[in-house]
Length: 331
Image (cartoon, rainbow, N blue to C red; front, side, top):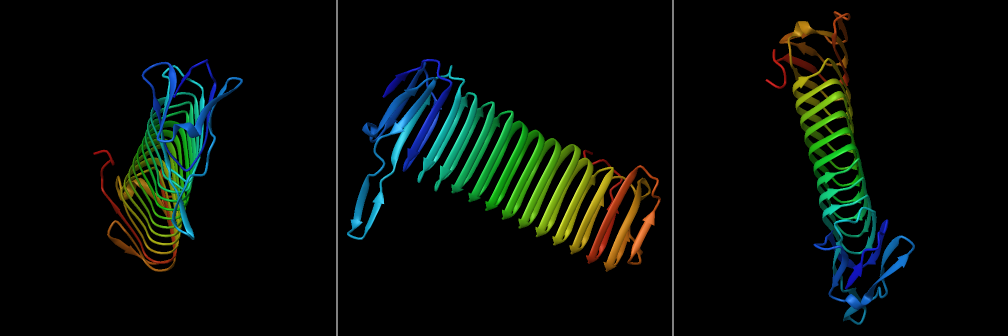
């Protein structure tokens, strides 16, 4: 099925029980290919083009008391010259978008996975109810997403802001270049690496956080309610890390302002530079501290508070260990 492009500013797709692929066409027309093409039609509403699904029930009866909806496979092609917005809503099926360049993209996928690759858009916004989400090679001003039940994989994203929330499922993210990154997982671990940003925020309510090769011009903030925090090769002006129940471990941490706090767990950190570069503010209720191989008594320690670089660390139940690498993290 082919439909002529008439300078539409919006392409609206409302689908159900569909396995849909949206990509760019080789000509200046909208194309639809489907194994049950007669179920669909193009409609116009002003400057909006609508892909309507006329039949939403197509069941196979396995036994008298059980039936199953056969999914429809669709391939939709959008003209290269189309710079309007794409709004895709799909229920009980998966959606795949690749090699698209347009305005805003809004995707809602209920009960199925979402795959997006090679996207150039003004803004990219998605919500997935039950299924895996994978975003790769996305360029947009703002990228925002919500996954309620399922793993999220984010990579190769360039944006001004990136905000992602997972309610149940782990978050895997790497190779992100944005000004502001916010990642949150309510129930699931967060594994991240190779970030370049101004500000980075990572939060996990129930699950560990593991980070590698993070660079932030201004600040990195990491929060874990129940789970350990582990970081390698971190560079930023200021870092704030808190863990209610879990240890904090950093290796090759380069920052002028280091703040590490946990209620129940030890803190182990190797920082760049030397011991004499930093002022220390250490507080331990039950445990001991060791700074640069020198054991100190537990309790409150304050040293050289007027120095430019600061280290603040505290734990109620656990030990605190600091070592120094006498180098920059980029060495």
